[in-house]
Image (cartoon, rainbow, N blue to C red):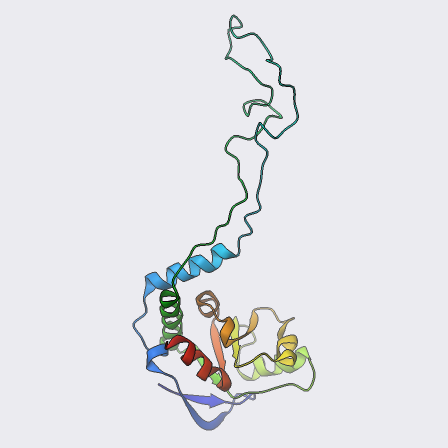
Length: 209
């Protein structure tokens, strides 16, 4: 698949980037995408929720009334969950929500996500760029030139670039990652995926294994 390479002014450079069909033009596997997104979202959960059960709260251990003859239900402890101030029955406990997926499935999911974006014409290839200093207005100018000001965008760099990352940090709806930080969720969550030229080799080598 051939895609025109743009510069930061939104103009064509005259070069074409060759996107591998094995990564950007496969038949999407929707179930693999679902599982990978599910894992990503599950891993965002801290799982630190906790409520006290009857054994963990303060309170008298004496039997609060006699067993029979009151005309009401039996009751042995004021800490029972049926009473105000008692422990919570079957309350949440700290747990890990993460799920395991094998590497091949995760690669298939990311390739499916890229193929979906490619079929929607939502992938742009941009020549590599850098800023002399971290300035948000520099990145705003790039977004304006690419007509991405009001779109949720994902910029994929070939390697970590501190000036570019810091320039993007205050912009809403924009995320800058390296090709090793890509996830299926991030790809699908963006309206437009912008791939820098230097990221293509890394993406294709990571997903073609």
